[in-house]
Image (cartoon, rainbow, N blue to C red; front, side, top):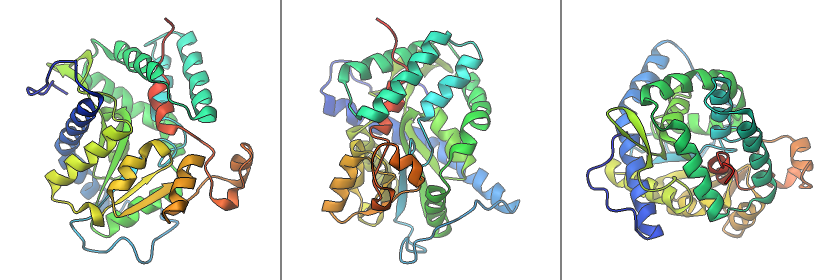
Length: 319
């Protein structure tokens, strides 16, 4: 995406950069939503209806056009981190060397077990990911992204979460992905699932070529909340009537914005926070997967801590 003309110099407070990232993500999402809507209409005409295993009887409210739903991606809609799967596809296409892929896999495992976000790691991750795409055309990465979705992501969508999203669509509401993954990758996933669109990390491009810089910062934590707030304002939504879904405590700012927050496949911190506030919980993992980390599945607890952090951190390079 081309750089926005109102960008300010690099030295800004973390809060200001989060706002900038959120606004950029909202703008990118709105620009892509028209294509997503047309794609959804085409699917409907062709008779394509995603499987729905679970419906909320009292919510969402049918016909409430001022309501919408916002879904985190990694470990909420899809098993694992989108950027890791994308990295696998890029490695297969010789974008980088084998040792980098091995490091990506190790980092994903570390973040999933530790659930700890190190700002220095996050900076490394951002710089590494941007260096990989720098100089490539946006259209090239979009085309490759379509192939990678079919190869590594299509079979990793959680049917239960997909059904929740479909319930909102069936009620006539818009559904958006909100993720730290690149907005291009997120947009592909949203379109394939028949969703309205996606808010994701926006990498700057000039004349259709990535510059190696971000617009703002990765769409993570508070930046996600800013993106949702900006999009809701632009779309005329009432956040008190909206829903948000996530697995990670890092998304508490986003979840706290809406009137209907859901903890889906939650990590331990989010589960505790959600229960204290009587938020709804959903866990679509198997009992065996939950037991591997010593957590009873029946309690609806999370095993994959720091899902969004893992997505961003997967591209860390050696110093």
